[in-house]
Length: 315
Image (cartoon, rainbow, N blue to C red; front, side):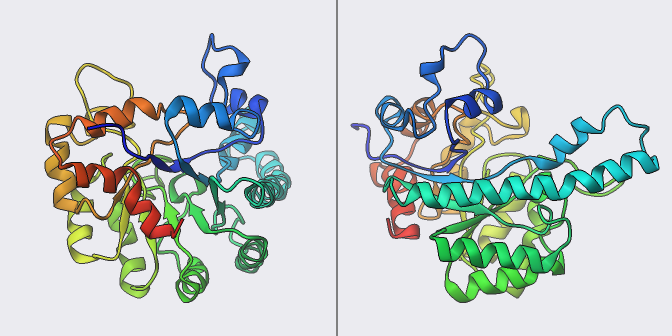
């Protein structure tokens, strides 16, 4: 089949080439190859065959803080004071990034803005979290991105419930990282393990939810969730495990094997799976070719690559 329309629902869009080069560095690339930003978007869409993207805002502020306090004595009062001083600065960075993507999307119809709002980003301040949500929704945000792993909270944390309730009442979707990224508390399970989302789905059955990284670690848990909660959608960013080392499997051998990919997607439901890549850290066009090579019907491939996203977001 000819390459159909492609919508990538999981893109970490950047403000400019310099920011992209710092966060998603590819040694040896000339600056003009960094195009997942306003300076190069038209060239990038042409090169990658894209029609539309969801700009999924996220800044790993905890890693930034960890790096800045790395030389201080671990567990010391000095380290604790430094973290406390840095936290509001990092939260402000997230706010500014959210504001930027909402304003930018008003000028670029090919970009749907999802803003980062979760209790981890606001370090437990529930009111600040909800204020940011309301401000960005008023500014034009079309969805919310959360990352339990990197923001270091469990999705079923009751401090998140007002956010879930508000989004559910408005019909505004939420996209969450899921899986092993970001680690865990000592002696506990990963923050983003799929089963940790079950209390959310039970309490907020009308919440429009996209669970990211369908094919990655803990993929078996996602099968049970898909059967139990038919309203949940998935993005397929993370890739499939291919022994030739194609570089598109986020969790390597813990991902769904390429030989089982079509069967797995059908088990989940190809009408609930949306194309996503985690670009610009991952290649778009190569993953499109992977999907086109699977033992799926043309209609199933078209649904995954774009039509499901158009129906979900009313693009």
